[in-house]
Image (cartoon, rainbow, N blue to C red; front, side):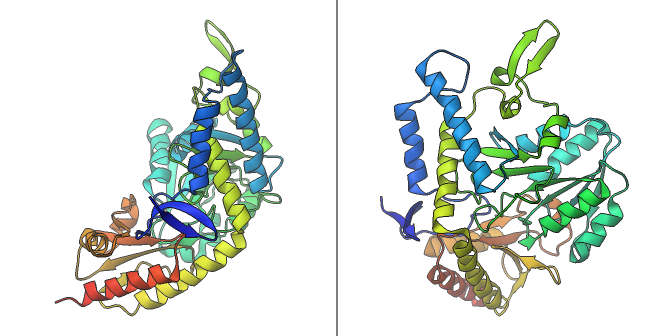
Length: 396
């Protein structure tokens, strides 16, 4: 099978497919797929304590990948741990802190279930208050957050880029605000990583989580969190067992003192190897180049979509946007639009409630179409999409 090639790199997208759902899952470089296959052929070991060659090799591979992620974010002093999904990483983090009943979680109605459901679980377990930023409050986000923080230890839980409508948050400014007020910032960068440079050398939030298979273009079943040293020490992991334990008595266990203390069981070493490779691919292509390319696609999309009848963009006044656009239609259900695009021109988009019910409750539409790009999309693909949408929306 032949695959799409962009910026000199082959991606796991068949020729002829226009893939515009990167906010759900990014498509891997073929070299990352090959790295997974090579690992299973040549090592195929689990990162557990053993004298076998396979088991001895796996932890070394994991440590190399940790360092590569630190280097990608320019954050040499951080702690990096791997998880199957970001939902597990976030749930583990929220349940690993003390005094959760006394804290408050501040999040936003623009967030998706992957962020909000773990917070709601904490509320249901400990009675932790949750305070939601409204869509209108996103227009003056710093002031809105500042007004909602009541005490030291409150948690601001946000995405760097809202998956619902592409609103981009100034996470550096929010991180500084939280530090000034004694609050914690838990930041999901799943939609930003791979699209622009993220530098944690001068400003690392208390906790960063990311899926490995969205913007980072790694495989499914990979995610990670990054913590600063202070947060690392404060967290007592909820999830324990396997390689995270170094000693155990009848009513006592002792955790690893390394980043592996957050990694119970047998983790996906081959997937982590592939994720590291994908980050290298993104770095080698150049994140500034990728960002410039995607800005051009985004400007073209927003400009032309505004002129297509029966389409309303989901926008917030004065907000900056990343490579995600969602829109509602006065003429068709979102699922119908997505199916027509796929059936007629092999265009993959996302449709429905976008796993974001709080956001949808504030809209006049029951469902939306979401378009999300990455470096492997081209202007020609965007033009084909726009031509098809014009035909669909003007049909009698």
